[in-house]
Image (cartoon, rainbow, N blue to C red; front, side, top):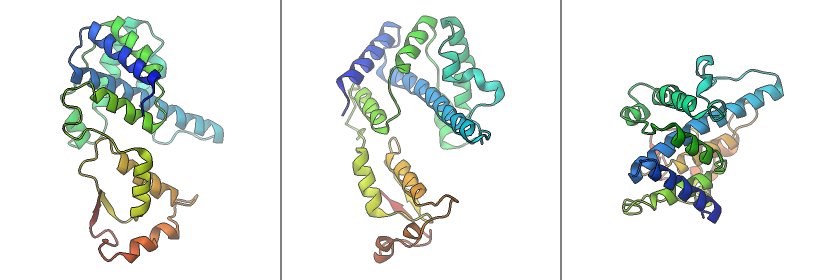
Length: 237
């Protein structure tokens, strides 16, 4: 459930876009999503760097190349408004459009994506506000998007609501997915089930990455004749 404080922050952010000339609700959600994605990429990179420093290693498969360091949220958020707009519009946003494999679903959906913020003052204000929104908890992300969708006249009409995390976790544990299975979630939305399955399988691994017996030969998995074994079919949520 979204808190009053988070709702107030979203309302203020929404009003900022409207006063800045971006009044289409769908466009507002798109622009917020792009910026949240850029911020999340930097958070993941910072976590990898922290882990590497702790163990005296290097970051494996860094998300940002040496030439893309200026695109990181932690770098450009403290720039002056004009410089910030130049970086986000001309470097960071084009960078996220090129992520993923050519021809893949991500590339197809991002092909026509447009960064609509043209005012340095508006971007600086928005970046400052987004930086104050806590996004570490996945339920908070779901609450945030559900609340933003509630501002659309079509919200809920097309099933645009998420399943609470604890319900997802319960359902995944009941299904007991096997690492050799293919999972299909036709109505994935924000992919909560798919992420929960990945986390479930990750927790079934030992320190060397080998799957534990409980995951390979799950009794619940083997007891039901309707389940598909050894990856010859799929599972649907």
